[in-house]
Image (cartoon, rainbow, N blue to C red; front, side, top):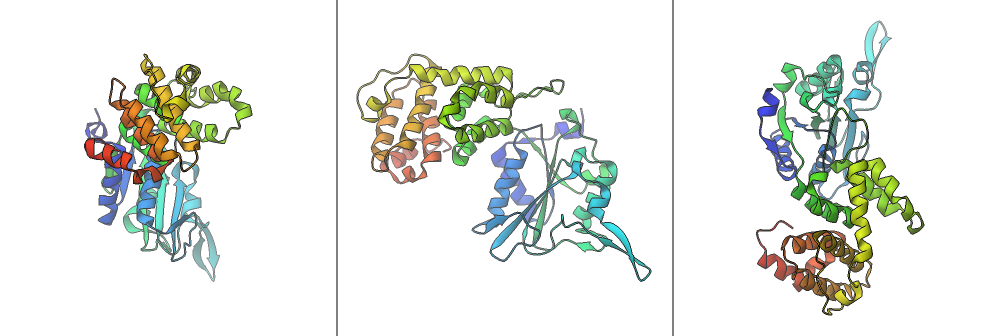
Amino acid sequence: MSEENKMMEASPSKALRLLNNVVSAGKVPMLLGGVGVGKSAIVNEFAQVLAGDRKIVETIRPKKDEFGSLDFRASLYETIELGGLPFIVNGEQKRAFLGNLPVSGEGLLFIDEFAQATADMQKLLGQLVHERRLGEYVMPEGWHIVMAGNRASDRSGANKMLAHMTNRLALINFKHDVNDWLVWGSQAGVHSSILGFINFMPKLLWKFDAKDSNPQPSPRAWSRLSDIMKAMPESDKDLMPFHAQSNVGIEAGLEFMNFINLSQDIPNLADIVDGKKVDVPETMGLQYATAVALVSAIQDADEKLKPSYFDNSLKWIDTFPSKEFAVFFMRAVVGVCPELKNTSTYSVFISENDKVLI
């Protein structure tokens, strides 16, 4: 077993803190993890932490009230594109850089797919990481570097990292974590149906087979499907089975559609949000589907009605056999309606469930 596989693995929440520790010390971290586990999402979240109140912009020259964010895919570039094009001036060789590296201000340079890059590109990036310069180019002091890539053991086309590079980086072995992803998803606005489904079938958050070239479920794939679902007009709902399978694969797509179709059998939502007595569905799948539907109902409700709908829905869900439904519901509903955190319903729930991550 290789050394990288013997390392401890960090969940997304821990990886975010580890990134902060390493960068605060002036060093360069590298996230190592499987295909689609959410490395880019963590780096984007970290960029927001560094930016604070500043606006994040994709530019090599961010202004004082901006924070630059550049995504450099190492596997897509040739060394000459990074090292600059040579030319002669008065008998002296100089290099013209292509404008893909920061020149001023503050920001984060994210070097992704490092392990898929050629050995020559890895050496060139090694100089940038170690010396913060490439020939005549010098990286501005206000810019930080974070790297990411797949491990050779992930069978994703990654090359073995050069030994001198691993010695210059703080390696962070990254793994997907269902609970962390659900918390992130509720805050990032991932479609409530997907959050409910992953709560119901957590094993389908991520499955990867290097020998299978068909779509497979991953945090990245579920996030992409969520964006499609939120942008899709009601008239195109019949296309959902196609979108599901083309993004997360046949198995996960079929299971997800079965979950979606449960909504036809959910209890009367109007009675639940009005506080009327409603029997709890017998199956766990239908319980999750109803919780998802209640989140959508509260999100679409008039602002004046949201607090009472929220309170009545939580009281009803609290009668479910398992507490996990109330936790899911709370995460999902405050994710789409953060103003509900100011209600007494939310405060009481937090005080009674202080060990539950919301």
